[in-house]
Image (tube, rainbow, N blue to C red; front, side, top):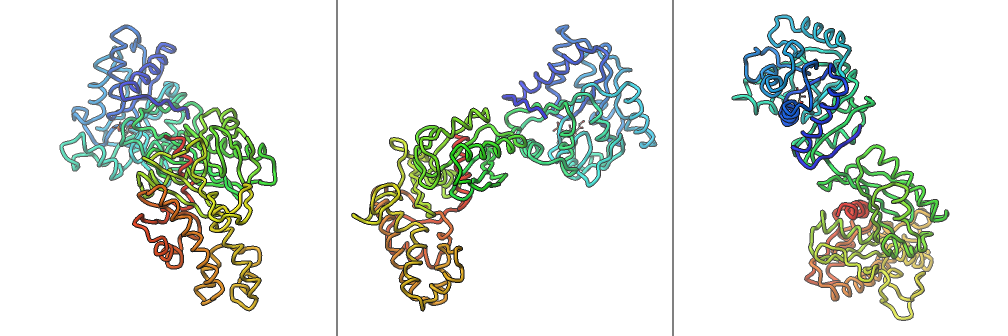
Length: 536
Ligand code: F6R
């Protein structure tokens, strides 16, 4: 399905009218499939203008309308017969005998449906079908159902369609509950299909149409099997989507957000850290391509650990990226703009935008290292390029050597990896402790959360390790609060969800009027923030 996004309703109507006019100019006796409803009104007016200006001639055109209420008389000003006379047929030089609309006055609707279907086929089928879309995804009056009827048929209207169409009637009770409609196969046999959608009310269904697999619950998705469908919609109806990529030590996460910041898709692939940077970049590009084939992605944002300079990862502690122009490579490969930033900065941006929504905040992510993101006036503060690397602030002169080359970095004491090392060292010295026993049992699966179970089961050794760990965490948080005085400090990372043993005692120790909160987005923060980079 090709998508054309127009600025507004007027532009959409003019584009659609041009397409119809070209079809008529190409084949003057073509068969048009026409829709009613509010969406095509502007297109019909534009066609009338073109007809008057002598730019298109309807005299040989044949038309078949999609549907008609049942039962309804032609004189009823809500009948589609009446609508078509008012909106198009009375304004252009089409011959009345060449226009066809299912007859809502007949006694035998099934007979009428057969007649109508046969008549379309006698005319060689429809050359160009115009469609609108219902808020529930209906096409014509093919309402969502387990099975869709393929040929022209009598159908019951759903409650949501009756509700949506009640705007044209005096009251909801006057809306007919049945209709005669072309079936899905009748529509899909058309040589070309133009689907129109306009306005905020269609935003949700257009997003569903573009992102869902073919299913009868959203009949419009059936159009995806047709080789020549163009969706012409205005900006209000169209949902631009942004892809976030969050590169981590063990996996690369992918997530899509829509314009309302909803995370509508999530997936991940393993990070092949033993491979060269080019291979990882290729893995990422392949996955992006797969996603872009299905979703209308208009921009990509990438969050990566380490130092970033523009489109280049200058250094990433646990990954093989050194002066690697990842964003440039992806842009070339994928043909859309790619933004790059530090992963903790991305997480901070997500929290500031849709999580805690603080204007000035600090984000601290506890994981393999400690990541930091500084948000000032809702923008990431980058300094000369890579500000916010708070995990490498020195808290101990002549302390533990860090892979960054400096000694005493905060993350060597207060990251989750540091906590695991501290647990393992204490367990070795206390082989009769529960902590030792638990580490032995869990072998290589030891993570930061294990200490909480040991403490909860009364292990004094674990308690002492964690008390010391909290001291290190407190020192760093106090320092950054002193420097920035943010509205809030947000913590993210697996262990931070432990309220009783981590958050409560930490708040007591830091003893500041600056609130310390837990990330609302947690493990999604990075990928959502990366997508926000692309959006903003
Ligand atoms: C009309 C039709 C319906 C409408 C749809 C959208 O002939 O078949 O499927 O296209 O209900 O209606 P509007 O344009 O009023 O939002």
